[in-house]
Amino acid sequence: MTVAIVPTARSDKTGKIVGAREAARLIRTGDTVAIGGFFGIGLAMEVIHALAAIYEETDTEAASFGKPRDLTFVWCVSPGDGQQRGAQRLAQPGLIKRLIGGHWTAVPALYQLVAGNQIEGYNIPLGPLSHLYRDIAAGKPGHLSRVGLGTFADPRFGGGKLNERTTEDLIELMTVGGKEYLFYKAFPINVALIRGTTADTAGNMTMEREALTVDTLSLAMAAHNSGASSSHRSSASPIWERSTHARSRSPARLSTASWWRRPPTTTCRPSPRPTTRPSPPKFASR
Image 1 (cartoon, rainbow, N blue to C red):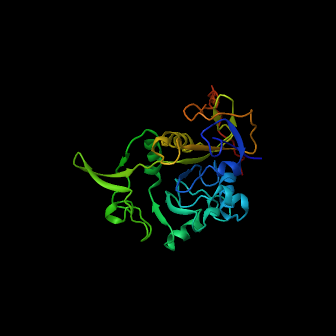
Image 2 (cartoon, rainbow, N blue to C red; image 1 turned 120 degrees about the horizontal axis):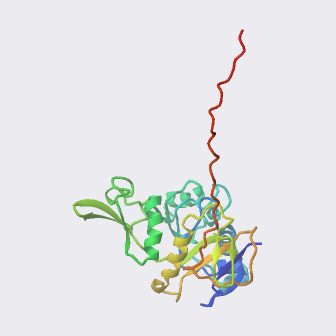
Image 3 (tube, rainbow, N blue to C red; image 1 turned 180 degrees about the horizontal axis):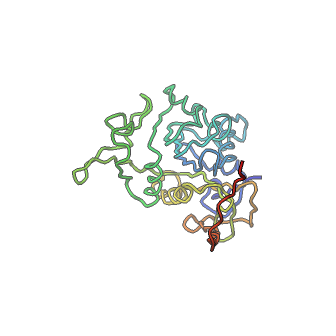
C-alpha cells in the first residue's frame, strides 16, 4: 500500500502518514500543483489517481469536503504513460484551469483540453522550467536565460502560449549587457507531488530505490518556500508518496531542507594491465 507523508488535512500540523486519498484532499481550489517525476519514474501515481477519483465522486463525503477546482498543474516531463495512468486521469473539465509543461508527449488527454481551448496551456522549454523550480525555491523573481530565444518560447513568437484562451505573459524579453535574454517569471507552488523511498522520525526522506531523482529536491523546497505567498494557507505542502516496495519507519515529519542523503557509491577499480603483450593469433595454413 502506498502512503503519503503530508501535513494533516485541513490543518497546519505535520507528522502524519496518511493514505493517498487524504493526501489528495490537501489540494484546494485554485492551487498551483507541481508534479515531479520523469514519465512514470518517480511519479506520485496513487495521489494523482486519488485526486482524479475525488473530483469524479458525487457522494456525501465528496460534497462535505468540497472538490478542488481550477487547478494549475506544472511539470517538466510528461507525468503519464500516454494511456490511462498518471496525469491522464486529470483530464476533466472544471478540475483544471491552466497547464504549464515542458514536455507533453505522454499526456495527450490533457493536451486535447488545451487544443479544444477549454483550459489555458503553456509550453515552456524543459531546461529553463527545471531551473525555475530552483529559483522559486530561492525566492528569486524568475529565471534569466538565453534558451528559447527565437523559438516558440520567445514572446515575439507566442511566448509559449498554446491557444487563444491563454493570455497571461509568463515570459518576458529583456536586454542585459547588450544581449537579449528571456525572463521566465516565478510563481508560487502551493503543492508539490513527489515520491520518495524511505522516511524516518527525524523528517528525512531518501530516494535510494528510485530510478531517478530528477527535480524532487527543488520541488520540495519550492513548495516549502512558497508558503508565505499563499493566499489561503499558512504554509505550502510538499506531498510525498512512498514507493510500494519501501518500508515505513513510523510517522515522520517532513523537513524539506534536510531530507536528501546520497546513497553510498561503489568505486569500480580498473583491471590491472597485462605485463606481457599477448601473442598474435595463429592461423592454420591451407
